[in-house]
Amino acid sequence: MIVINIFLIILAILLLIILWILLVPFVLYINTEQRIYYLRLVTIAKAQFFFNESIFYIRIRLLFMSFKIDPLELSKKKKKEKEKKTYKWTQGQDGYSRTRLGST
Image (tube, rainbow, N blue to C red; front, side):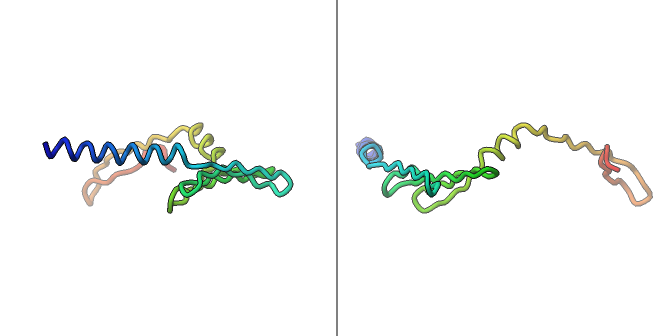
């Protein structure tokens, strides 16, 4: 019986949070003269877009945390293939040592 009551309390809290997020007003601000663009969920989050001829990034503030995302940099990282590091163990006078293959 206690487990069911705790479950119902947690479920009610989660439903209230979801309802709060759905009913919170959001602001879409576009100012092309000053190049200010953002989407804001009042009291929860704000996503601000910065772009110029050479830069583009998104700054996200979620509650008390702040993130900076560069979508162009993310796509460049995905395109690069990761170099596989291979090593060879060799025995010398001092014992075994590890040398990287393909290094100069």
